[in-house]
Length: 399
Image 1 (cartoon, one colour):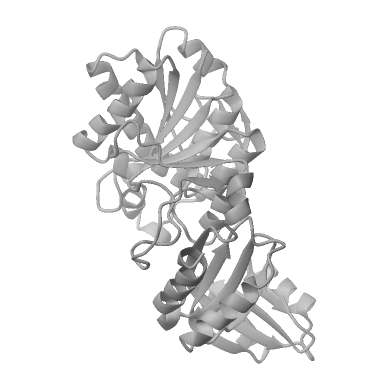
Image 2: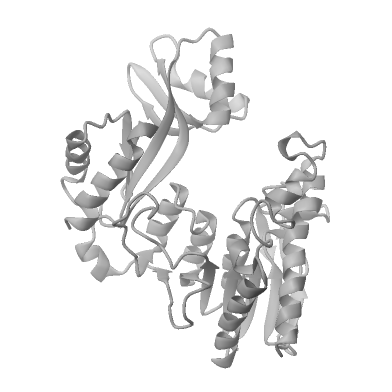
């Protein structure tokens, strides 16, 4: 039995016309001899009645009195509604199809409601359903907790649901359908010269997703990588033969000529610098951790400790440090720009090229660090557009 997993995001199921486009992709795959697992997100985005954020607004959002288990009761409904609606459309169009929520589809999680981790995927129910059906529609983003309650997987959880099912079922591929044609070398809203990427490695796309590219959730890519299940990022509105961006194991021929794959960015950061003489790093980070603050982009130097927090957490950290009378230098409204590429490792001159490019535009580098596939620089928000465009030109057009 050949199996394909197809995940349709909120914009791909937002209305009747969009759902018909999604059904066309399902029909094409079934006609090619595959059994298809369709994973759906909640219908639409905020403002539309069954979107996750709209459901949260029914109970006052962040001001809600519901606990995390009770919130999962609410937000899981969006995907369940979407599953029933999509299955109904498939049946009307002549498919042998059936619907399952996350627990029905075999997802078993821990008890960390609102951000549950999947412990196991029991595929017996889906395999049994395929005896009589060509399509099984599964509500993404959810599973059954150890306590026996419905639990959701956090933002981007439907991507993760699809990847886990692809791995568990030995699917030939997992297709992530969205409203863009695939991965680009940078955000096309900021970089007009951004290019389409036909092939990327799991690691490259996961790094770009971690650093702000919102096309796919990084956890889904990591799951697919562990199982060596190829993924494609595709547009629901493209033609049936338009396969988007292939995400797979590294393509050595690509690595040979492409040192940098793309430029990603993450806004809304605040930089903190604390003198290390009187306040050692372990004490600072223990203090922040004890208040459930997770720091990002860290440099520990003999004379100072530098780290970043998102704006809401930054407010808390500022107050905590002030209450402890710990002097700190704060730079608000920062952006982390990430230069990502499997070919960065072992390629001399990458950092020099970054520094030179930003200097041409008189952009101050507030902080930098690197790994073997990514180099990060922190700049001020006002410099974001100029920084990304000059780096894109230098690495992805000049090359």
